[in-house]
Length: 444
Image (cartoon, rainbow, N blue to C red; front, side, top):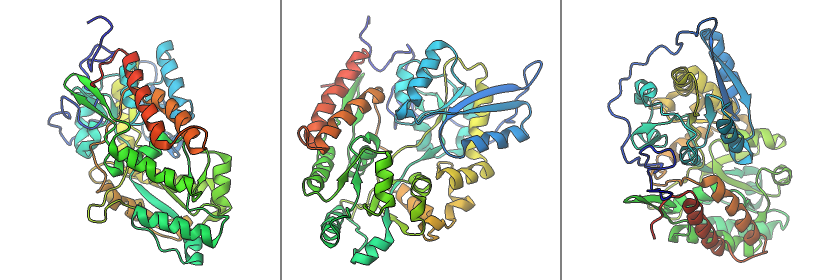
């Protein structure tokens, strides 16, 4: 085949990198019985598993495991979030031969790691645990019938809103995107200093959640080739919607995860944030001075007769290439995701949303959160999770695509080059080119 490669991929293994529907299907019959998580220690001392990640609560989880599993000790290292440098560090470590055994890798980026040959096949070690997970979550870590990670969480979206600002100006909680736009106009007229939200054009994954809700299908497989449709009809519809709000100056525009963004929300300059469930904890930590003023509602929908929700995030723990103790790494990763006490703590500290079959029964899923006026916010996201389409797939070069996205969308949103829809056309071209640069076949 020479340099030309299809979905057989860079690793030389049979991998069908469709994040939602692996070509070999999910792993076969699983037993609900799990082996002992503490495997026999290596001669001369316990097995040590290095683990890199950034989710709040992970360090405490490692300590809890270590206290009860003397034979397998986990050494946790806090990294930058993946898109902020964590993934580059992980891939560099794999190439250098000194990577950790476990790493937090977002579901959107896992196919990229696979194409780079950075993942270990853990199918045999993971199989005893898989019956504990919702079946669709196994598809996010399974390619070509082989499993490369353990699911942890998902990111159904909702609308965080300043209840005090809405009440002050008589703004009703919008149920549709049309109502959201109308609320934006009413709010600006009532107080020119306040916008309905701050649009963050460098956040590809957040925008992908909006596109997914509208029915977008960015990546797929056709025969032995990739399909890339990042400027499909649904995506253009969403881009045009936000372009309209930007053109009317009904939203502020600012980089995501910036000091300016958090100041905007702290000062009450933006009244909503439409985002993933894990933002519950991010907002609590980043804009703590506004505690008690927020509430959560379902994200606005396009059609009330067919409500849908987007999903942003979900970060499996992947076993990286070169791991000397993959079984022990899987044992710990499975414990993290399925142990009731451990994950209940992650809900509280990290805002993580469980993907196990019984995760909805964890106490903190129905717990009141003071930041949101003691609202039981996770119940809103639990309902949203029922309306997330499982058909949205990621491609194998998302870090490269993300870089292009931030530049093109940033220029458009700030009036320095075309519209958001035109930016998506550019991103589409660059996405196709990034796959071809890897020697992957792309369908017309």
